[in-house]
Amino acid sequence: MDQSYTVFVYGTLKRNQPNHHYLSSAKFITEATCFEKFPLVIASKIKGELFTVDEETLAKLDELENHPTLYVRQLQSFETTDGKIVEAWVYLLQEYKPEMLELEFFESYFSEGKHGKQYVASDDDLTKPEDILQVLRIK
View 1 (cartoon, rainbow, N blue to C red):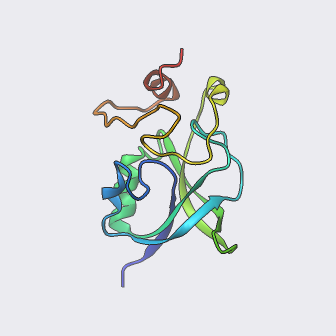
View 2 (tube, rainbow, N blue to C red):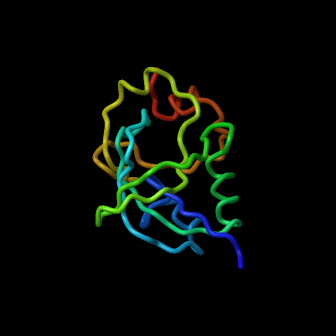
């Protein structure tokens, strides 16, 4: 039997978001909230979704998130909507520029949310925090 992993997604990998197709073979578990706060581009304490994925899907997610160069996959604790604490993998920006903490914080990301930062697929190789700031048009 293939090994399975629990993964927390909070951005474009969520259901009805542009990169959700990467999780086509994954099983949705529940919505959850990050137990710990993190300095993220779009939020600090974030809401997202938990999925069970196989090794092949996890490898695809590693590639999408440019793990371990740009984002690092880490085990963290999450609180499910029914109050259970679940350990799951999450991708977190390895290094970030202090200017990122000056951005408005949101607890949940949707591609067409009120933040005005609609997801645009890019063939660019985003490997550094400076690249992300450029995409966000922050100088």
